[in-house]
Image 1: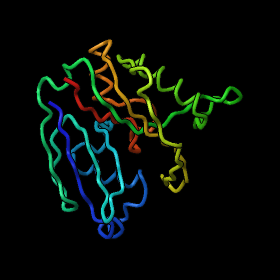
Image 2 (image 1 turned 90 degrees about the vertical axis):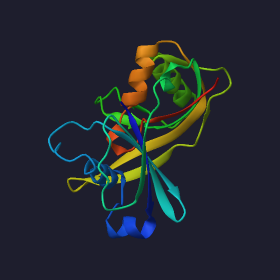
Image 3 (image 1 turned 120 degrees about the horizontal axis):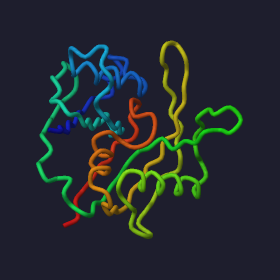
Image 4 (image 1 turned 90 degrees about the horizontal axis):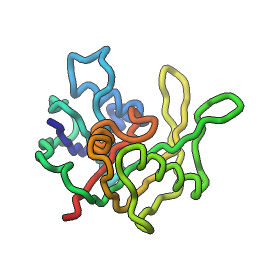
Length: 195
């Protein structure tokens, strides 16, 4: 079973609880799954700003226990949801490449390289993108703090129409996300079946 939760958190409440960056949100969401302190992360999320609130979409294999913050709505994803051949999709990803000199992961900013990156990821994850349907946002940098150190991610919103080419790989991509930095709110595919 897979669950999708929608959480609305007023900006004042987020500030009071110190949800200031993607890592703070990740830690707060992890608290919705008690008893897993040392277990690997098993959920995906996406954070959007919707004045005067933040909206979080959370995809998880387990139903979250509802914390004492935010307005939560959770539903089970219907059986057969991933059985369609074509979907409209949107994903906020962290497109990166390894630098040759030191093998460090660096963000991709140039549009042709972003398109190439996404088409490559699509092929690796069991789908292709319909010609001329792929659109992408300008890359946006986000800062986070973890263990007292400052970090940065590059986020790009990709959307379009996809065609499933390998069902098991596509289902795995839906459940596990695409690309790096999934613990920081990247990689979750939002899908709308096209009958």
